[in-house]
Length: 224
Image 1 (cartoon, helix red, strand yellow):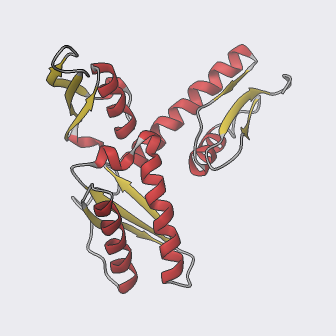
Image 2: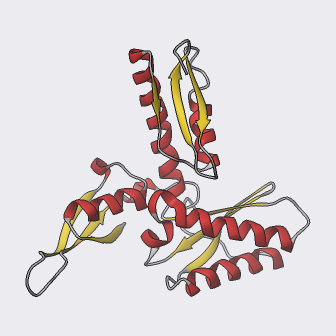
Image 3: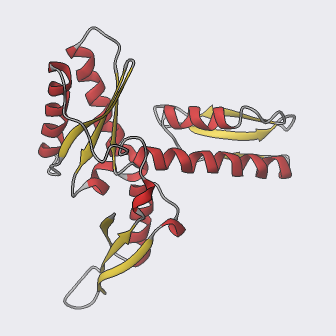
């Protein structure tokens, strides 16, 4: 898989790639496509990088070589809605059905603008997914949760968060202190809590207000 990202500096472009792809820096190769330093003619610098990611990083959303076509009126309506939303955002793409489970429907976006549609920490993707779930609730009386993904971002993000949770848990055990993680959505916070649930001497709690709260990982017995 090859994607391009742009930033004012090489570091900024790479940071955007890390956020959009949900990968660590050492998990992909970078090729500088264009480097334009700021100066008299160009007030702002610009660096475009091309990111090369191994094709074996797919998950179950890609295991059949691609998404599936919608099968009923409900799926057709949701697919059309999401395609219309991203088109009005100015980042058109194709939406297909990634998976079907009991009370859960996965939709996959294929777009040349996937990095922007995913957004920083997946917040743009979360926003479109939230709207899609509201629409799904109006289309059917059944309790169906819509999972929206692009470029396998959610699977890679989940794997990275599990690694982060385990690493943080070990750090807290060694220091016998606590550590506050970055703001996360409810699903991501639940993943951190679940991953560290088996550590008897380490506990977790959410802090903050709103949708994006932070998880504090702490050693049991320390002042909270």
